Length: 617
Image 1 (cartoon, one colour):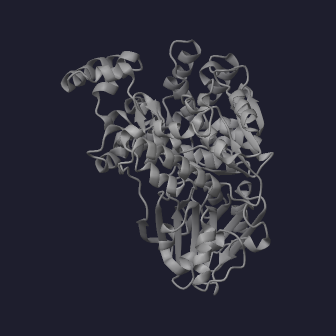
Image 2: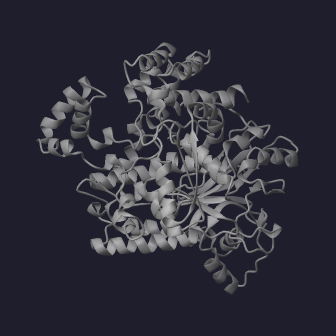
Image 3: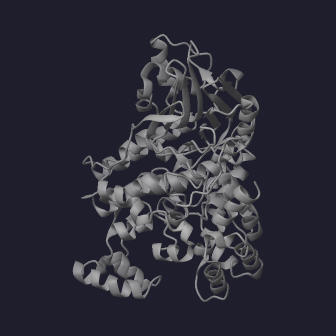
C-alpha cells in the first residue's frame, strides 16, 4: 500500500516542488517509509511509499522506463509480477529493482493498455508519457485501490491521486460541496455517484483506464467487467475448484519482504483465508460489555489456538467509538456511515502494531452469495406462491401503510419490483424520507432507483440472485466495502489484501450456477463445502454476523444522546437538513418511541465529515 498524487499544471505560476511536497505529506500515513517526486512543465508526480516488496532504495518511485520517457507512480500489488518480469526480460527489458512496480512501467512500454489484461493484483497507477505528452490512469478490476481525478481548480489544473485530501493542499484547488451527492448518500450510506462529495472531483470506475492531455480527458475505456456465466460444473467439481484456486490466491497474496498477518473474526470468510494462510499472528476486535452479541473475539482466539496462531484482540468502548469518528471521516475523504468502519479502524490499528500487511476476507459475500438479502425467508418463500397481482396489490396497501414493520417488509419484498426495492446491502432512508429531510438545494441529486437503472437495464433477463449479486459487485463492493478497507488500513500505514478478489478466484466464481451459490436457505453453499476441508465444522457452517455495533443501545444513553444532539444543533446543519425533523429522530430514539439509529448515524457521519473538511480546514 502506497499513496500517489499528481497534477497537470494550470496557468498560474506556483512553486511546484513545495506544493507537491505538501500534497504528499497530506497522505504520509499511506507511505511513511519514503517519498519521491517528478516535476516538469507539463506534469507533477508525487509518491509516498510503504515498503513491502524490495525494501531497497532502487524500488522508490517514481520509476522510469529505459529512456525515461515513461514515469510511473503506483499504489497496490501485482502478484504475478515475477512471471511478467520473465516475459519482459526475454523481450530485452532490464530492471534496476526487484519490485512489482517496475513491471508496470516496462509492461506499459511493451503492451500499452494491454498490460491491464496481463496483471493479477490490486492497483491504481498513473503513467506520464513524455513522447505523447499524455497521462494514463488505471484502476483495478474491483476498485480495491481508490483513484480520484478532476479539474476542480481556478487555473485549469487537473488533479489525480489516492486521496482527495491531497488536492486541498494545492493553491488552485476549488473546494465546494457537490449538492447532488447528499440525496443518494442518505439511502446508500456511502458516496454512490461517480462525482464525489467534492464538486468536479470524480472516482475512476473500477476496471477502466483514462488518458488525459493538456488537462482534458481524451480517451477512456473499460478493460474488464463482471458477469456470471455458469459453466456446468458439478457440485463436487465446484467445491474442489474453490479450494484449489483460493489456496493459490492466498499463496500469491502472502508474497512480501515484511511480516504478514491476518484479520480473524468468527465468520467463515476470514477463517477460511487464515486456515489456508497459516500466519504467525491474527487479529480481532469486539465491544466491551457485549460478550456473545457484539463481541466475537473469543471465536478468533479459539480458532487461533486450534490452528496454532498467536492471536491479538482489542475491546472497544462507546467512548472509543464516538471519539474516533472525526478521524475516521477525515480519512474516508467522503462521508460514509457503514458502522463496521469504526471497528475496522481499531482492528487495523491493532494489526499495525505487529505487522505491515494483513489478509482479509472482503469480497466473499458478494462473489459467492453470502448476504441474507440474497435468500428468501420461509415466510417470504411461502408468500411468493401467491399470484403476482395479489402481491402487487398487498404491496400498494400493507407495504405503504405499515412501513418498517414485519408485515410491511413482507409486502414490499414480495410485491415490489426488484429494481425498486433492492439498491444493495444498505438502504437507510427511503427516497421520500430523504427528500423530506433535505433542504431544497440538496434535493437535486439522483434517487437510488435512478442511479441503478442502467445496471438493471444491463441485467435484464437475469435471475434475481444473480442480479442482486452483480448490482452489489458493481456498486456496494467498491463504494462501501473496499473503500473502508483501504481507508481504515491506510490510516495506520497497513496494507490490506483481499485474496477472494483475485483474478482467478473471480473467474471461477463467475462459473457457479445460482444454486451453487445459494441453495435451500444456505448462503455461500459451495464456499462452505470447500471450507470444511480446512476448518472445523463449527466455523465452516457459522452464519454471517459481520461487524455488529451496539449503536442502538448507546444512543439511548444520555451521554451519547447529548453528544449527538450538540452536533445536530450546530447552526450550519439547517443548510442541509430540516433541523426540527432531524432532532425529532434523535429524541424519538432516545425515548424509545422508534428505532432511528441508522438514520441518526448516517446524518451524523455527513455532519462530522463536513466539519472536518469545510469548518476546520
